[in-house]
Figure 1 (tube, rainbow, N blue to C red):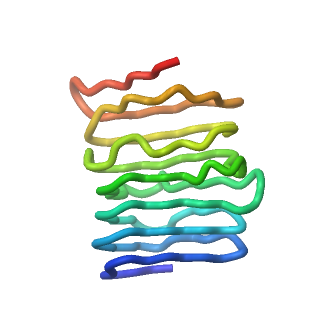
Figure 2: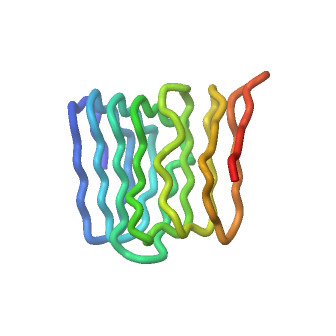
Figure 3: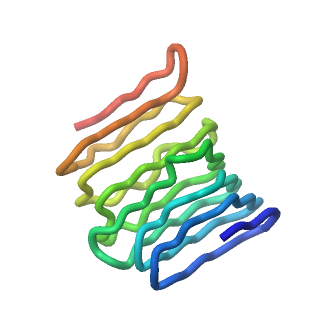
Length: 139
């Protein structure tokens, strides 16, 4: 799926969704019955809401230098197994994180992060900012 210049967009599929290059000057909502992945850069100025409706599915939006300008919310319904998000700008804060995940990978290229308390059964990988930026994790 590709959107070259939209205001708001909502994608709903009972299967996996692969997001192509998307530029939206509003909000993005994605609901999938399988994995949510990407093949192009996502540039979203508003909020981004991600929902998977089937247990043990993954959300991987870490393969491109995405530009998220607003809050990123991952629905906390117990279905997300692995979550990976990359944001190339400092505009969006830490996403709203679901519980019960295995692996969490966050890459925020130009700002530091303060992570909330979260329990994982696998690995936490965080890359944040450049230079004197830092990552904080509270238990």
